Length: 74
Image (tube, rainbow, N blue to C red; front, side):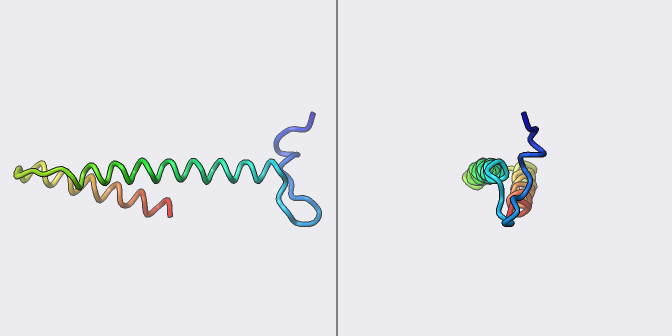
């Protein structure tokens, strides 16, 4: 039985093997789920209202961190 490394080689025609395609699709799906979760967190933060300056600063910092993670995902 061939291992995953041997199966993931590019075929002579230069196209991706089925294993590579499956792995790429799994990575894309994982990235989409991560981005969706971050967007939900972002929406939650934006929906919160507070008059407490310390809480507001914490929410702004969390929002900046989440937006940076979204940007890193592309």
